[in-house]
Image 1 (cartoon, rainbow, N blue to C red):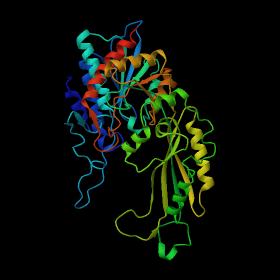
Image 2 (cartoon, rainbow, N blue to C red; image 1 turned 120 degrees about the horizontal axis):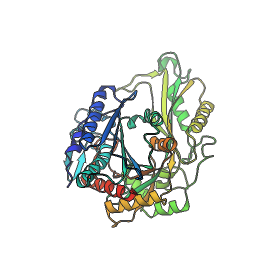
Image 3 (cartoon, one colour; image 1 turned 90 degrees about the vertical axis):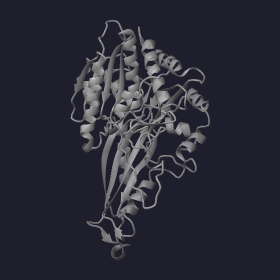
Image 4 (tube, one colour; image 1 turned 120 degrees about the vertical axis):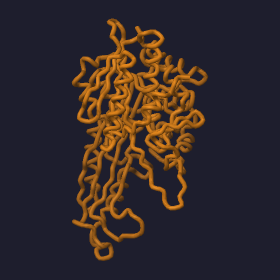
Length: 454
């Protein structure tokens, strides 16, 4: 069994990139990576950015060998959880049952923030590299190992870094383990990701909060207005109601729908994973197709007025909602934001003023899983996980905007070889990672580099 000491060490760093209070923790994690990678006799650089550092490690490059970049991120999500009310018991769906930055193993499952996203996954690659160097003294490929500290805040400095260092970062392809598996023991190749486009809509009403008894009925309540505006984003059947939203959508290929159907009952799995009472969404598509291959509009946050205990009878001066759109191939994020803004202005109720702030974006990504690199990835997955179960070829509903950045800037495809299970709780309390998947990730790294060697 591979030792886990290094993994446990990095999990103790509270490297929360979005919180300025943890800036020193992010930096300490980066410094540890520099020290560790240098101990493997790799050439290591720490690059400062306007945000958090980027760490680059290389072996001695040999002419004629293929150059492979492995990407990971060492920053993590916050550990927010609701406060316990008097007499309330801790609920594993809402509260951490262990200390988030003290790795804890129960029945072979490692619990800690970042255990899956992404420290467990990129540390498996690091361990694979370490073992190969210890056994053979060299790697079968030219390696560029890139680790950043800002993925959880949208990687704002990574694309500019790629552009500034385009020549020295030239490679033949990128490999990333930051996605998921369809089930335990099933090698999973993710060949596509949805894109993303975000905005915040804020409605301004009266100049100040008003007494709802004195003024109610005479002025528009921004809370009422934001609810009405939010409701215009979808038709009653679940289809997005923004005019032109579907104009550029590239439909799924017939082979994709057949391959995904063969993975099992995706509707039942979705209900089981989410605990939702029923499914809902765009008609004509099953839950897996909706999650992986169709565009969406989701309200991520909505609020205004009094949120505390008891009553405070006010008409609030403002209300807001945060909206994200998941996009599929051929959809352009900037165009979708323009269409969405026009829709919101058109349907804004009278009596309030609408302000829209556009957020971060990322293109959808898709590659051919049957290409030579795709087939090499599938062979490596079989080596790591065996052939007891058929290989799963999937897209994922989430977004990793830097994948498209690698293609745009470096002109290369990305192999997404995830090690996360569906119930890993990434971004939620009790994030977890099976130690068996860490071991499989070590094997995956070694098999992949052998498959890609020329």
